[in-house]
Length: 356
Ligand code: KG4
Ligand code: ZN
Image (cartoon, rainbow, N blue to C red; front, top):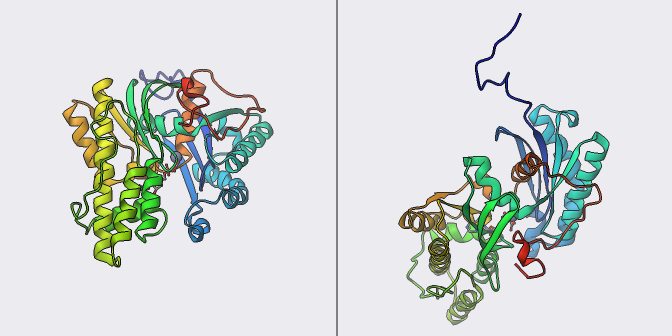
């Protein structure tokens, strides 16, 4: 019997790609299975926070060892949760940089072994491209869009014109935004990671209690800077006889207000210089509610739509890596098994060799 499927039904459509993603560039070991219909079939993230907390930051050697111990089991779990096996996959996509090189090597080498053993394609994904394309996974955002990438290692504004096509509009000249949150949290006696701790403490604090600078505000261009703000917080802390919970909350709220205003100003400049239909915010700091609210205002004033992926997809995860892999495979891009891991790997090809 001839089965005639209605137009657009699954029966008529070609097979959809399914990719296993692997992420090991910092302090999260992650594996996920995503398909071309933008469905996240599984996503598991194992945080190493407890291992790094005693040191007040990520220790590269500790991170690499923890990735080695977890990656095989995590990949297996992602497949099990998706109800799939290696044979069902089209490819394995792994972060190949930028990041802590020991961790990147663990993930990429594991992915190479899996690809070789299962006879599947390998896609070497730029971690930043994973963050950049997340909004296409979650919200099907069309190109071009303006990307604000704010994480522990990066703080950049990029005109995103297509897969692999990024133009850097601005970057930090010193610390990344998340780094600033983490360092200031330490200064004022809050735990690690600093971002969530500062946001929590700021809830009960007065954002006007301390008059901290808004670095780069009003300056031409779209570059960021946070070291002056960090120094201002340090001076304020040194001038205080003691820091009780109230002062701590005031410091957190005042710092957060300054960072948020500074980032908002840079995004405003970028949208003026390069009007775009959509502003996408990505990276761990995009989890910050005050920043999201400010970016909503900035976007609305510029007639632009703000897309902020759900929190679990803002911080490091492997679904974004699997999705970036799918986007590249759709363009016929995959990588040989001798592809190299890279500690530095700017999204904008004109920035290679610069610290961005
Ligand atoms: O993207 P991510 O998970 O890792 C990379 O750096 O690639 O970002 C982690 C950073 C940390 O610095 C953390 O303090 C910051 O994101 N972060 C936040 C918040 N949640 C995480 N910063 C501000 N507010 C938050 N709620
Ligand atoms: Zn990241």
